[in-house]
Amino acid sequence: MDSPQRHVRDELRLFVAERDWAQFHSPANLAKSVSIEAAELLECFQWSDDYDITEVRLELADVLTYAYLLADRLGESPERLVLEKPAITREKYPTATARGRSDKYDRL
Image (cartoon, rainbow, N blue to C red; front, top):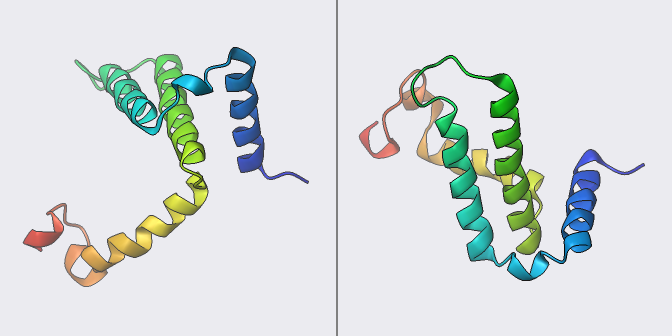
């Protein structure tokens, strides 16, 4: 049985291929698109903490889509990247000094 992650990757690859859009998907363009879509997600919360869940879901889907496409373009697994990051962050933010604090690691 295919994993949900493989299904997402394959669906995105098919969607892009059907439109011949891979030619526009350089790592730089995809990274820009992640940032642009993240700004649109943030706009949902611009003036109030009240938000339209439908709009938030759509913008979040755009952010995740471009992040998945970028990872795929780089030959990386989004899931592996996400799971590797806590190990790096644990080094910077040991529980004993970081618990309950939002300070940057160099100020703990």
